[in-house]
Length: 243
Image 1 (cartoon, rainbow, N blue to C red):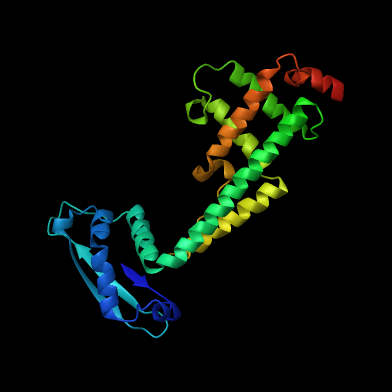
Image 2 (cartoon, rainbow, N blue to C red):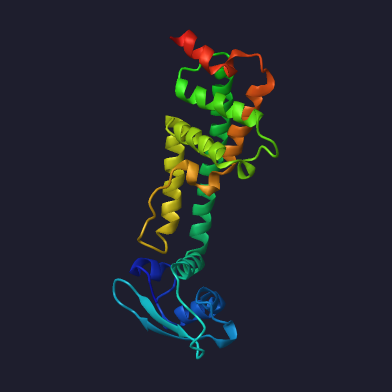
């Protein structure tokens, strides 16, 4: 593999000598063995430092004498990029992670606030987005007829699909959309420290780091069940009144 830095980063972080790169690779030799699925005791590696003007870098060859052991996967490549990137840019990445966490927590708070307001308006039949209101009503009805834990991971696929659909619809709200865009930018800023290939932006409903917001929707939908006589549960009746 080749590990490269911009000249200004190498100078600023003191990675402008072979000794610095050797120390880095010695520190993470065990990570390299793990990424290649080679027992650490059998790992052999060599490195060559090239002090190029615009991008100081090292070439690393790693192997084992056992021909039946070791392979390089996409996961292994990404793991080494991440490990070395975090080691080289330590403090700077710590600040970036803190900023990303701040944006994530802010989005979750705004999400909870928005859900509370929406469900209150749905109960009072004053919410103007009929599509989302009906999805919440349908989810309430499905949960009322579902046994076991009312937690996203334990639910049937059709209920999960409905919850994901609600997340996707609410994610288009300007406040949530803007916050998710900021969170994604923080994520990309971190990734840029060790790769130039940015992943495609995934929908909020597919992002595992925000899985808890799905359970927020479940709790709010269950809250709508507290008054079964409320017309909020009678979707057909509501359609009739709307028409």
